[in-house]
Length: 241
Ligand SMILES: [Zn+2]
Ligand SMILES: [Zn+2]
Image 1: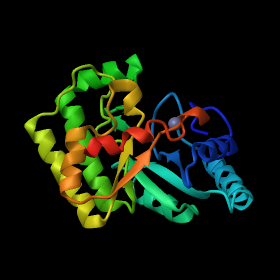
Image 2: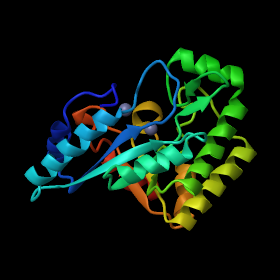
Image 3: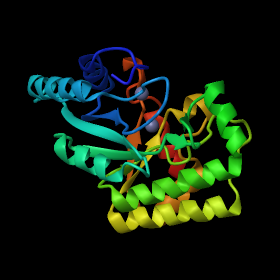
């Protein structure tokens, strides 16, 4: 329902069963107040359908797999109260925090997109500034929103080759991990990264910092096609060996 995925919800449940998973969590994308030509998030009506279809599937597959209906909440520093209100009003069982859209003064640019339109605008703002704003936003999100998992932590500018984080960015990452510890928030190991850079989001070095803090991990495949459900999950244990 985010306009760039294929298949029905039930196809994803069937794929999870085929993979032998005991649980599948849907994380449908919520954004508030974003000015952007492509809508990659759900409308209110979409969410109505999502929760009713999810409820039906929960019943139908009750004995076979646990289905959790979650939301990936996109942070927006100007819409914190609306985001909180929506997260409370939807019957969602699990909330992931992400930060996709950065405001450049006139419109929003997707920091995780491969599209030139986004990347050119972000480069104009400056790599350092974009990355700093991204981590600042995530830290605020952890503070002000009620979430259970932190999604694709280092996904910012993932399509800009040779992005490196500065010392200051690493300090921000450590602050985020510390805040996640304080609030009991888990860290997602998003395996879509394997298809792009042979490593999940976040990278191994961050996973190690999280492990040192005893953070919980949640495997996420960011599946946008039923075939992608549980992708690369078998590679996760080796990240910690
Ligand atoms: Zn999507
Ligand atoms: Zn996301």
